[in-house]
Length: 118
Image (cartoon, rainbow, N blue to C red; front, side, top):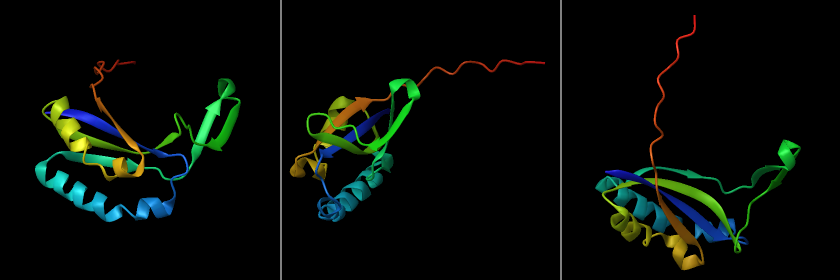
């Protein structure tokens, strides 16, 4: 099994009411994914974070918006291949609300041996 991350983007003006309207759909989908062993974990961040810029001098409370969309969550999933991950990602309720889902395979970082310092 490979791991993939689903990056969930919504329209910049997406509201908490928009999110509430699909909560039940998300719950049903993630429960099904859990039963199949597809779902690993997710992280939701509906509020704005801080963008650090200018060499670290600035930290402004905002969201990065690209092509009118902002990231609001990520979902880690397990699938045999990209095709399986894409098939399941196409079921995300956000797609019916003008959002999109980016599917990216997660590659493990090589682990370096610990260095003993005496």
